[in-house]
Picture 1: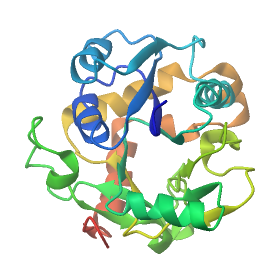
Picture 2: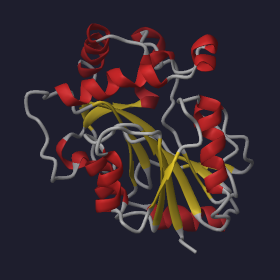
Picture 3: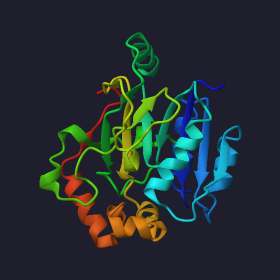
Length: 258
């Protein structure tokens, strides 16, 4: 059985997947990649870059937050003894002290660790990143979530720290909607030098990246729309540029071990 498993879901992520897959295949022994019926080259990219990982078709026709969480937890349950992390394609797990973090959790009998999150913001959008080079190495500017004045920013979807994902060893993550928190007991808080999540929500700020953000709204489920899940995805290009501008003014370089 694999020691570390990453689970992710995607839809038409041919732009981001090469960076994401190359980054995480160096950390995890196995991955389960849930395809939300992509129409681009996403599936082929997965099979080329991580041939030993699983690519499965989602059981859901649209992106429904609650059903998505339920689906990833069913896959988590297949690996009861592994360390597990569920990520979006824009979330990069940076873990220079991962072995130490696992060791500390075992010593203190912790089920999982909340990973500090950072919002990555491209402050040099005229300098596009090289597809063959680590995105984390090329685009390293952003803001730690615990340093953000969410109320002052007034950006939809950025109302509280949402990227502190759970790295855990239970059968399932027992997540609240969106996986922003968990009902699991005995959770610890990881330090930045052990592991963190870099959310590339506004980086790289290229035409291709903006196009992938604009497509997400069309995949939202009617239940989610009615009940306000994923409202941040309903935005036009002017709104997205406005959000990026606010965040870029606050961003700085985030070292790997900060």
